[in-house]
Length: 104
Image (tube, rainbow, N blue to C red; front, side, top):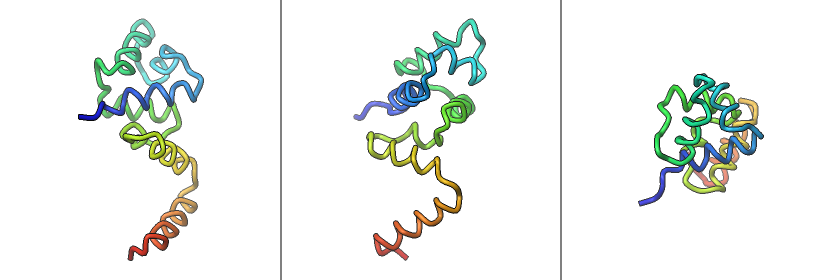
Protein backbone atom coordinates (compact mmCIF):
# COMPACT_ATOMS: atom_id res chain seq x y z
CA UNK A 1 0.00 0.00 0.00
CA UNK A 2 1.38 3.39 -0.98
CA UNK A 3 1.56 6.21 1.54
CA UNK A 4 -0.98 9.01 1.32
CA UNK A 5 0.55 11.65 -0.98
CA UNK A 6 -1.26 14.61 0.64
CA UNK A 7 1.15 15.12 3.58
CA UNK A 8 4.18 14.86 1.28
CA UNK A 9 2.82 17.30 -1.31
CA UNK A 10 1.56 19.71 1.34
CA UNK A 11 5.00 19.98 2.95
CA UNK A 12 6.73 20.33 -0.45
CA UNK A 13 4.38 23.08 -1.61
CA UNK A 14 4.63 24.94 1.70
CA UNK A 15 8.41 24.89 1.63
CA UNK A 16 8.41 25.93 -2.04
CA UNK A 17 6.21 28.90 -1.07
CA UNK A 18 8.63 29.69 1.78
CA UNK A 19 5.88 29.70 4.40
CA UNK A 20 6.01 28.37 7.93
CA UNK A 21 3.38 25.90 9.05
CA UNK A 22 1.81 28.60 11.18
CA UNK A 23 1.74 31.16 8.34
CA UNK A 24 0.08 28.73 5.96
CA UNK A 25 -2.42 27.62 8.59
CA UNK A 26 -3.45 31.18 9.37
CA UNK A 27 -3.73 32.09 5.68
CA UNK A 28 -5.85 28.99 5.11
CA UNK A 29 -8.26 30.02 7.85
CA UNK A 30 -7.06 28.10 10.89
CA UNK A 31 -7.14 29.92 14.23
CA UNK A 32 -3.76 31.48 14.99
CA UNK A 33 -3.42 29.59 18.29
CA UNK A 34 -3.72 26.15 16.66
CA UNK A 35 -2.46 26.83 13.12
CA UNK A 36 1.06 25.46 13.63
CA UNK A 37 -0.06 22.32 15.44
CA UNK A 38 -2.79 21.48 12.90
CA UNK A 39 -0.48 22.02 9.94
CA UNK A 40 2.11 19.81 11.62
CA UNK A 41 -0.51 17.06 12.01
CA UNK A 42 -1.49 17.41 8.34
CA UNK A 43 2.12 17.20 7.18
CA UNK A 44 2.83 14.17 9.37
CA UNK A 45 -0.31 12.43 8.08
CA UNK A 46 -1.89 12.15 11.54
CA UNK A 47 -4.92 14.01 10.19
CA UNK A 48 -5.99 14.71 6.63
CA UNK A 49 -7.52 18.10 5.80
CA UNK A 50 -11.08 18.10 4.52
CA UNK A 51 -11.79 19.27 0.98
CA UNK A 52 -12.63 22.83 2.01
CA UNK A 53 -9.36 23.18 3.94
CA UNK A 54 -7.35 21.51 1.17
CA UNK A 55 -8.84 23.92 -1.38
CA UNK A 56 -7.96 26.86 0.85
CA UNK A 57 -4.38 25.64 1.25
CA UNK A 58 -4.07 25.02 -2.50
CA UNK A 59 -5.14 28.59 -3.15
CA UNK A 60 -2.63 29.97 -0.65
CA UNK A 61 0.14 27.78 -2.08
CA UNK A 62 -0.82 28.59 -5.67
CA UNK A 63 -1.12 24.94 -6.71
CA UNK A 64 -4.06 23.07 -8.22
CA UNK A 65 -5.85 20.76 -5.79
CA UNK A 66 -4.89 17.80 -7.96
CA UNK A 67 -1.25 18.48 -7.01
CA UNK A 68 -1.91 17.01 -3.56
CA UNK A 69 -2.99 13.68 -5.03
CA UNK A 70 0.02 13.04 -7.30
CA UNK A 71 1.80 9.88 -6.21
CA UNK A 72 5.17 10.69 -7.79
CA UNK A 73 7.35 13.77 -7.97
CA UNK A 74 7.33 14.12 -11.76
CA UNK A 75 3.54 14.08 -11.94
CA UNK A 76 3.36 16.62 -9.12
CA UNK A 77 5.73 18.99 -10.91
CA UNK A 78 3.83 18.60 -14.18
CA UNK A 79 0.56 19.46 -12.42
CA UNK A 80 2.17 22.44 -10.69
CA UNK A 81 3.55 23.77 -13.97
CA UNK A 82 0.32 23.24 -15.88
CA UNK A 83 -1.50 25.11 -13.12
CA UNK A 84 0.61 28.18 -13.90
CA UNK A 85 -0.44 28.25 -17.57
CA UNK A 86 -3.29 30.32 -18.93
CA UNK A 87 -6.46 28.50 -19.95
CA UNK A 88 -5.54 29.04 -23.60
CA UNK A 89 -2.09 27.56 -23.08
CA UNK A 90 -3.55 24.56 -21.21
CA UNK A 91 -5.93 23.88 -24.09
CA UNK A 92 -3.05 24.11 -26.57
CA UNK A 93 -0.97 21.74 -24.44
CA UNK A 94 -3.87 19.30 -24.26
CA UNK A 95 -4.14 19.28 -28.04
CA UNK A 96 -0.40 18.61 -28.33
CA UNK A 97 -0.66 15.71 -25.90
CA UNK A 98 -3.66 14.26 -27.71
CA UNK A 99 -1.83 14.57 -31.01
CA UNK A 100 1.34 12.99 -29.63
CA UNK A 101 -0.57 10.06 -28.17
CA UNK A 102 -2.64 9.77 -31.32
CA UNK A 103 -5.87 10.05 -29.32
CA UNK A 104 -8.97 11.39 -30.94
